[in-house]
Image (tube, rainbow, N blue to C red; front, side, top):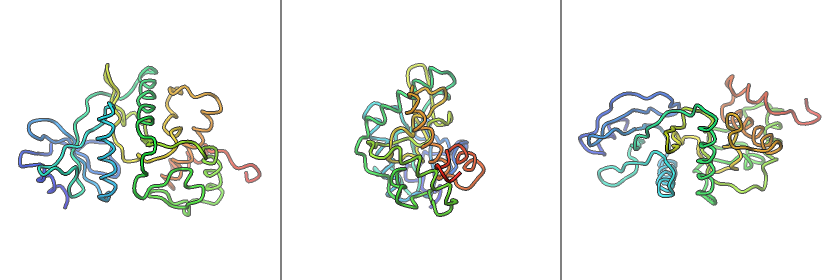
Length: 248
C-alpha cells in the first residue's frame, strides 16, 4: 500500500522529513495529533511486525525506554507495512559512562525477555550450527572455510540461556542517551539469541572478563559476517574470526 497507509492513523498525520539510518526501511518523522512521532515503512511480514510491536509494548511496560507503537484509529499496531512510534529524545553515547549505561540497559532487556519466542523466520547463532539459512543469513553463500570459522565461534555459546538481543547496540545511532535514561531504538535486527552477542561494546563497557569477552567478540564478528555476507564489511568481520585449527 505504501505511505497511503498513514491514513489509518487519521487525517491529521503528516510526514515531516526523512530520517537517516534506516537500511531496510523508509523512516520519516511525522506529526500526529500535534506531536512528533516516527513512521516506518518496510516489507516485513505481518507476523514479523506483530512480534516487534508486541516486544516494544512489553519492554515499555517493563520500564525500558524504547519507541512505543502508536495504534491506528481502529486499534491496530501496524497497517500496510507502516508502523508509527513515539519519538525518542536524546543523542548518541559518547563517553565511557554512557556506554556503561547502555550495557545496563541491555542487561535489563535480556532479563525482561527470557524464554521469549523467536522472531518469525529467524534463527539464533546456535541454531546455525546445524541450519544453513534464517532470514538474512544464508551460509550456503559463504565459503566453506568461512562457515567453519563462524560455527566454531558460535559453538562456544552452545547451551547458554537465550533471550531477545537488540542485534546492533554498538552502533551509536541505535542509542539515545539523556541525563536520566538510555533508549534503544531501531529493532530491525532484534531476535532471540545468546545475550553475549549484545555485550561487545566500545571500551568493553559491559565489563566482560578475558575469556568471556573473547567468546562474545568472536561470536559477534561471526554473526555480522554471516548477516552481511558478502560485502566488504562482512569480509572484514570474517577476517576477525579465528581460523579453525588445521584449516588455516
